[in-house]
Length: 172
Image (tube, rainbow, N blue to C red; front, side, top):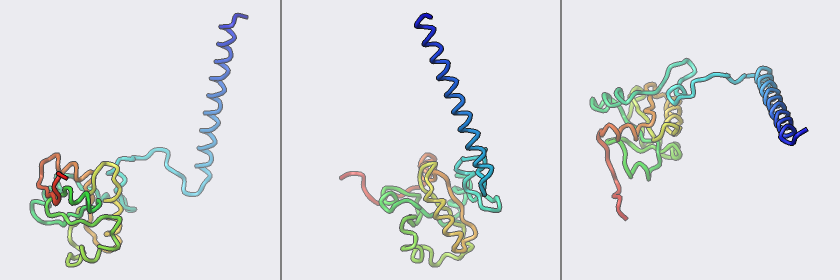
């Protein structure tokens, strides 16, 4: 048998074995998922907006247009969930800094005076930034009923050239 034919047979055998292992692994994984309590959904919407849903199905995401309208009418408090350093480098004009990693330390001083019915818009930066979601959930737990998250808020706000503030200069 020529050497080329031998190599082809070996490669075909390897490919069949790899396919078999892949099929067996997939079946095993699906079986375990079906047998466990709290099965994981096979198909799910993983968009940031879809991840901002409460148990009752209501979404607490807000569009940039809605956030801008609330900003212009002075009808909402804007909270920046990013670090204080990022806040100082630039934030939505009038927004308050309540970094998620310092939430317990600063919650009372930042939120005192705001009734629980106050519309609150929380933002951070980046589509996958989870700081605003965590902060929004914590505020919902404190009783604030009208908390919304502006996904990728800082970037969207800047791109639309809406009012911003910068507290530190860019030069060293």
